[in-house]
Each structure stands twice: as structure tokens, then as C-alpha cells.
Length: 105
Ligand code: AMP
Image 1 (cartoon, rainbow, N blue to C red):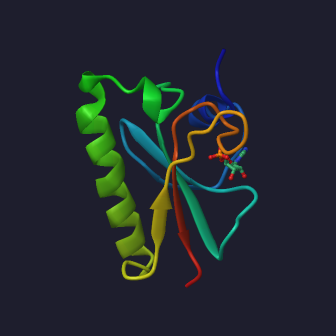
Image 2 (image 1 turned 120 degrees about the vertical axis):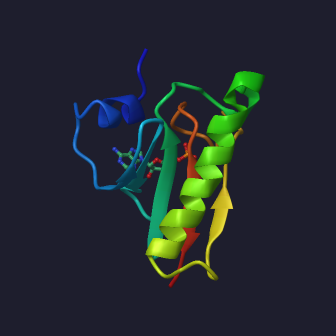
């Protein structure tokens, strides 16, 4: 079953796309918790951090490099935080791995 993020990646539903390459898409969070709230999403369907395989090592590294690039492009590179939610019963609502990038700048 595809996640809502896969539907965004496949352009089946709209979203505000900030960056995209072959393996990663970055979108604006639809319900922002900060002035800047982006989601860095691998195109590969991985549910949570706990589902990572060793073959995903480069992909995870690339997610952080994309976070760094986007923060730099938005001139917030010294004022942001990154986090993954994992607790399925509460914090992680969309079961497709994503890295939150937040800044109040
Ligand atoms: P999490 O609690 O870590 O699973 O966070 C999921 C995030 O996805 C939330 O911050 C939502 O606001 C966001 N979200 C859900 N649906 C969409 C959507 N269609 N477009 C953009 N962001 C979304």
C-alpha cells in the first residue's frame, strides 16, 4: 500500500516541491510547525528508521546532504533542526520515512 508521500512523488496528489533528484524529494509540510517546515523524503518506500537495511546507507547519507543543501539555499543554514519521528502509535503518522527540517527564520 503506497503512502501519501509516494502519491506526491508520483504526482498523483499536489504538493509544494522544494527540491527533487533521482532518489529524494523535499516538500513543504502541509501543516507547518515552524516558519520553515520541510520534509526530506526518500523515493524508496521505507516505513521507518527501524526498517533501514545496510543497502540504504548511501540514501540516508544523501538525505542529510540534501538537508544541508536546502538549508543553505534558503539561507537558514545556521538556524535549523532535523528530526525523525519513529513511535508508530503517536509521533510517526505517515509510514514512509521522512526527515523533518524546521526553522523559525
Ligand atoms: P510524522 O508525524 O513524522 O509522520 O509527520 C508527517 C508529516 O507529514 C506531518 O507534519 C504532516 O503535516 C505532513 N503531511 C501529511 N500529509 C501531507 C501532504 N499531503 N503534504 C505535505 N505534508 C504532509
